[in-house]
Image (tube, rainbow, N blue to C red; front, side, top):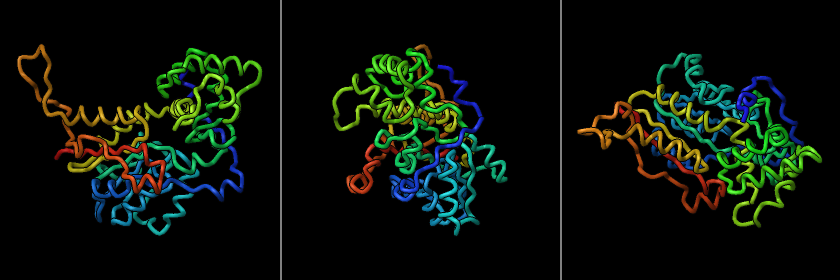
Length: 329
């Protein structure tokens, strides 16, 4: 896959949402809010970083607890909406159009060296899913876009219509864990010769003949997930962001990450695990050695998940997993 095209800074504006859709959709409902507050301990005098501002649900809770919040989001729509919604907290809130992996630059701009807590909520916002013109969901017919920021030039349609069968299959397998990756990629290659695949419904119609029947998950779920990850370079951003945020944590600061699929959760799990293991041992060593990267205490050995009450109120919380680590003093 030619990853360089995914980093082109040229802006291609998002399609304008229909008025009806603007009225119907809402922004992200914060998941695991009670657990986040309990484990991260926002309080007056503390500086928190919210790297995925979205609709501001978690940030509002931090602000209500008295903390000062520095927040980033790639999505201009989310920033404009949330800045207006949290206007009353503007003295303790600064928002920035940036990916959380750019945190050091943002903190430098704010004159902040270390932070007392950080949160990443890696899921796609309800607003993004429910705005058909953004192309994130197969529930609405809209342009096959999937960009979280218009700084990205390459859309999902660009990938579907231009990438080779081999590269498409690799995207579907690596990013979607799709067992029919090769068949789907081959089917797309046949369909796009006759007519470009330009909308979400075009893509679903193109791949339906090689997908299994409906189960609890829509059969196109993995393909849409894989394309979204590829368009936004999500896994690389997450890996880089974990390192960057860790460098900015003050002693005792807590770092929480909410993920929504196994690829993201595996990255976070291994990152925290590798940096909370006090001793390292290998068969060829005469004795265990201290781990020089041991900088965290894990607050839970297993991910924290939503209870039945939250899942009933917000079905999208069903797949959410929260992991929290504390920076050692």
